[in-house]
Length: 209
Image (cartoon, rainbow, N blue to C red; front, side, top):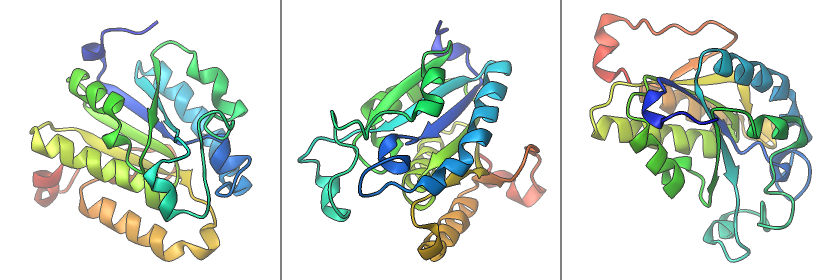
């Protein structure tokens, strides 16, 4: 059962944990599956804290422009690649949970998500997990941080490094490192393990989300 969106103070975003990145298709990499147990832990913790849980679902049509930048079609509607993986699908129907489709590498550009962040006006913390680290996690997180800046909303954005991954990581380390560095520069917190600190050095307070 969903509450009024204004009643939530925290949100967990689960980005693109779909078959097309983990199970089958030109962009899938089974190694991304290593983060699934940690994501399940964070989903359970989010429900215990009364957070809103949002699944971002990469879903494209065959003629989507994004396909021009990647080797072949991926996550096409009706292919099965656009479906949340079985290990997480049961959590989609839980209380306080929403699934939102996106047609770009930034969840912030999905009309449904933009409406959600506008309506969830009392959110103070956003935690982000999923894939792909240097593409959809990065682009969405940066867009969200800029959105909150534009509207002067003080929100902590937290990316769990032990719950993000990308395809072909061995060959993408430079992109991953750059993405993490730029997120930190934007004031996004990158955390490993269970401890989240919302304390910042005094000189960092101006860029706190």
